[in-house]
Length: 149
Image 1: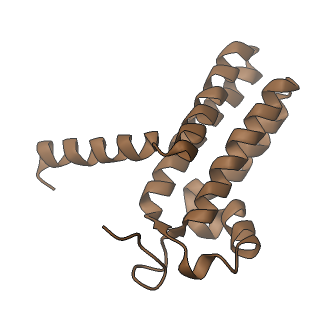
Image 2: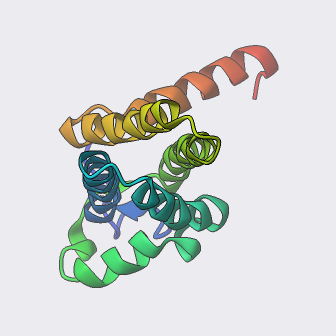
């Protein structure tokens, strides 16, 4: 199957360079936070992802930044379904939110575990296997089996 491009599909889907920027932001941000033992960086990442999870592209600082940085690459770039990206961001937001709660309640090991889970998932996705996408399709398949829709 040919890769989707902006000309061949719904323009609301996300260009792959921006998807990769999102993943790299999570991997590098969480890695830096862990190396310097600064949970505030994970708080900033949570604050960046939360509006994207709620409002999609309109609320995504990473999408808006990527749109400008990759303006020349976007017109012919392959696209990722916006629903997958939003689902993935939702998982990352929940985990980073859980990490914030753990840090607040003085459970830093739990906070770092949640944060590292996000970084690992984003890193694995950069290598070619999207864990969130796998979970999304499993959810869809099982919902169809149970409800037929």
